[in-house]
Length: 404
Image 1 (cartoon, rainbow, N blue to C red):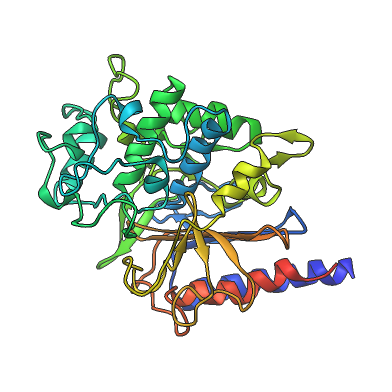
Image 2 (image 1 turned 135 degrees about the vertical axis):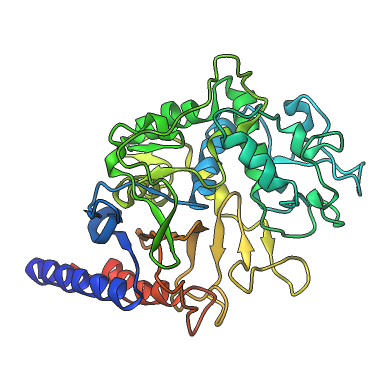
């Protein structure tokens, strides 16, 4: 039976290669968790077109919004230490009053930020704010410059005309606030906190800070195609990018610095170790990293679409927990696998598409990352996911469920 299982893995590798080729993807990496352990990894294609470097199991990708789930896990480490409560007004920690100007008397809470119900929106000033953050030379803004009326990058569309706590709006800015809160609560810069408190205990090679990646050659470039493959981010050519001088940075003033909403770089195999923390309810071997009840809280529904109480992104988001997506398997929407609830997060940025989904009761999970598609990603036929994602679900989930 074991021989048959590994023969099946070889067949799946062939199918992964076929998925990459048929969808004209640059590169593709995936991992499968079965019976609470990493059982298989798959690599296909190219991580750096200009130098013809191949994707392998150690290739790190900028995993886009899967970063949000990892950032949420970091925050919940601090929740686990009783440093805040989910329904606390975050203003008492930020040091300034965070309010939706349309509802000035309604506090913004940790629960709202983590479930995308805080009424924050990625307004028209958000892009310029990020550009100023990521520049090595521009003046570093503060969080208040984006979310407060007097801020340099504030725009009136930064807030919805919806009462906080009542309406789901997927928003990157929530996680800049969350990372700032992590800094305030921990006294550490966000990227260093995540490394020290989450990645090192799990034995995970992962970085929000590109300058701290040990082997920059292992980082995949992210591409879009226009008369050739055009790198969008992380085309480092083996050289670490210039970094801002942060000697005078005041911890707790701007958690956006290392892109907590989308900037995590890691491999599928290392991301699987983070997934195991959730599957095993906070345990790594016999070591408790985070209490079981805290991990289970993250999977508890905070918002469920009722037909009018949120923007579902064309049906992709139908329910949300504390920092993670709850997959309802609604046909033509977030459908992934019949009668198998999944938890996790999707990623989509700069040409990369990624997925991080698991079922703790079955102790299974799948992870995948693609760093560009020649003709863009084709929409799937039975869900809000892309065609290549549906194809991966069809092969990777059954592999995870296969009996020994």
